Image (cartoon, rainbow, N blue to C red):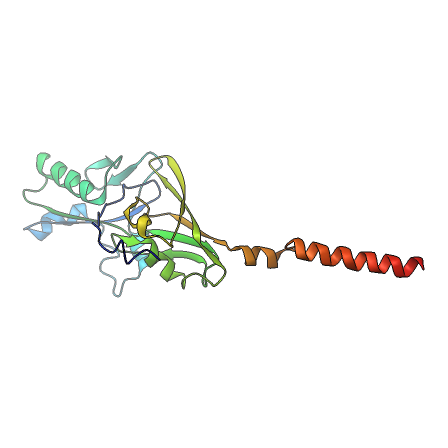
Length: 228
């Protein structure tokens, strides 16, 4: 962010991601009468202490390829074009309109959000996160930052959401990327840090024109010695 001095101030626009197929949701329903909410909760694993993320995921609601979940009593519920906040309201409305609960509280959390970071970083891999919003810089921090060979002017990001794949190139040397839709990570994003030119040259047998000339000169010298 070499131009951060001149572009220091800006507006942060937080945005919730839409629920996608294969997301796992943890949904809790509460009521002023606790016993009345029991049929709408999966309570088997909630009684186990302590919980870990794997148990929470196993007890969650898997979003089908048709963007639906099968919810107790209410049956199949659509998640198309909905964020977790919108799904909370949708379930609450169904509980009230159907005469199930009078004043329910619904909490929906995505529990298998992850980002994959590959290429020239110190710890490439897939990282889970539970925050509602994390930035590209935070994600790179999970992977231990870029190596000295990372190409900071060309970070490749792939995003699949709502059946559409987007691929973009990000220049970390400019703060302009902070104003783009790719500043905040969305679940299942893939980040690839491309190698810089010296790294590419070192990885190949013939790296540049100097190497080519050196090899040609050696070959010529050997040929002259052998033909004398």
